[in-house]
Image (cartoon, rainbow, N blue to C red; front, side, top):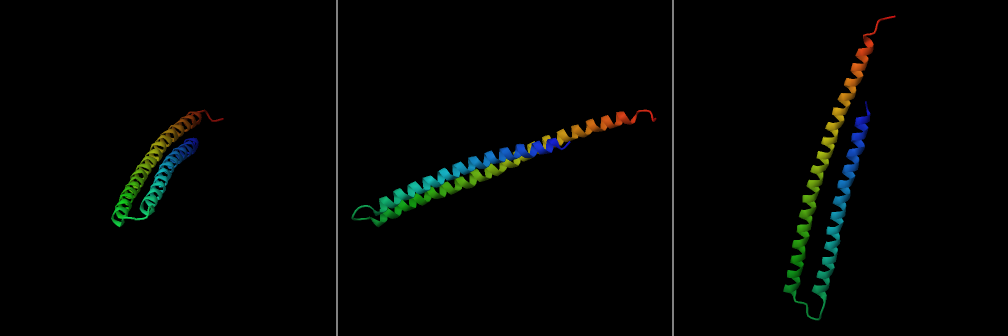
Length: 120
């Protein structure tokens, strides 16, 4: 009778790990993009003999805007991951409860049928 709960646990674990892996991969991609673009901004704002402060500030502000967009995407994707994980767990839990109830019913029927036998 415990088999459905064990299977539910490991099936849920597998799905949660898939979700975490996808989130991490996307998060790292965004961090790499941030690092690459920060390097470009640093080069752009410090190269040449005459650095224009207004242009450097504009370039930096643009990088910051994109950085905030990346952080917003992090949060949006994280909320989506949490939502999907909760859904995975609740769906597999409901399935495990149903299978356990079926197993209990079978055991109860079997016990009931053997209880009807004549005493010796």
